[in-house]
Amino acid sequence: MGINKVKGTYDVLPNESHKWIMLEKKIRDILSLYHMREMRTPMMEYSNVFHRDSEGSDMVTKETYDFVDRSNRALTLRPEGTAGVIRAYVENKLYASQELEKVFYIGPNFRYERPQKGRYRQFYQFGVEAIGTVDPALDAEIVILAYDFITRLGLKGVKVRVNTLGDEASRSAYQEALVKHFTPHKDELCSDCKVRIDKNPLRILDCKIDHKHQAVIDAPTPLDLLNETSKAYFDEVIRYLDAAGISYEIAPKLVRGLDYYSHTVFEIEADIEGFGAQNVLGGGGRYQNLVKELGGPDLGGIGFAFGMERLLMAIEASDIDFSSDLALDCFVITMTKDLRKIATKLLYDLRAQDFVADMNYTDKAFKGQFKQALRLGAKYIVILGEEEAKKGVASIKDTKTEVQEEVKLEDIILYLKHKLES
Ligand code: AMP
Image 1: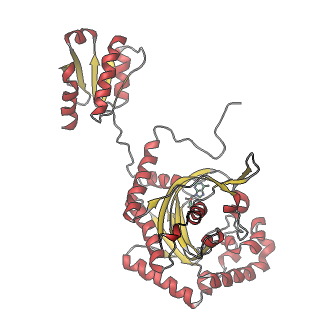
Image 2: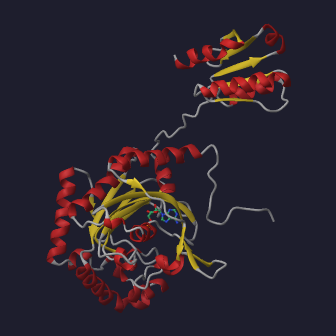
Image 3: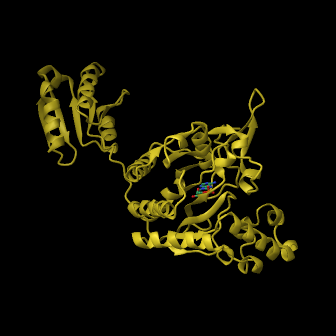
């Protein structure tokens, strides 16, 4: 048996990595406009960071990679970014110096899910968290940021869907209403949903199996059970979104799976052909209990996460040019091995001038090296021949115009600098 990659993982090959680098650059550029700073937390945490008593979501009960290390510590590979960020926020007492901490993260997550297009066992997310302040303007800011991000990327056919779950009282009233609504249909629901009725009935609403069941279609929405304060909070969020003039829609049935959300929840959906069920690019919401549950003070936060593989798929489907600008300025061909010392020095000097330069390292004949230079897209080819070297010159070919000129060895750098910069 050969050695293969782990099921549900993928390799980013050299001809694709520029897309990732571009995307990460865009993320960093855009988020810095929002005065957000990057945070990097470990890929593994003690299991109780994710498996908390309060948690009844599917993800923490069955989708995580859990293991014990050699000292019998229970560890989990992070399935999402928020819990680790909050753990670090609490552990480092970031709340003591800032009333609002705005951070973003980029990194891999791990979930034991059934792999398919747009769904992997190791996948990248970038996300933001704004922790410490509860205000409708801040909820709006985070939704606006998500909208701004996808707009700046130039994605087409993307929708921002917003809803509220209300405060804790509204939310538990809603959960009760769902239990009451679904109990008479318990036998008709899938095996997961039978458990969800007691554990996390909200999750029934985004069940992939039962989503066409009449009981799911007719289920009450959070908006039906909002109390006055929660309704006023949501109305304010909407007024801020309108003030910014972004386009969004209210999605009364949107609840999101994780059970730590309250108040604002939202999702970014791409209507792109071939995406099928994996059309959700990202989503997020406000969480009120997470900081407290992880041992911190009673502070709320709001955040979102985008799946980066899906963003790249959407970028491709929208025909956005993410091509690399790592073009080869110069390729050096040597006709004999002895000339490689001159080439080595030449390459060193070219790179000192910030030019992308390379040469051939095998014993290939001239023709093979020339073909190689063209295949790599070199703008200029420097040909070092024996006779020429004796005369102290090299030939330089412009691959676009096909003009070839003889240049003194000591003038090569200046010659190319002049050509490449004009
Ligand atoms: P979630 O943390 O489940 O709300 O997911 C947020 C986003 O991460 C989703 O909208 C997807 O874009 C992405 N995502 C979640 N799970 C996966 C996965 N297994 N593979 C690839 N992307 C994922």
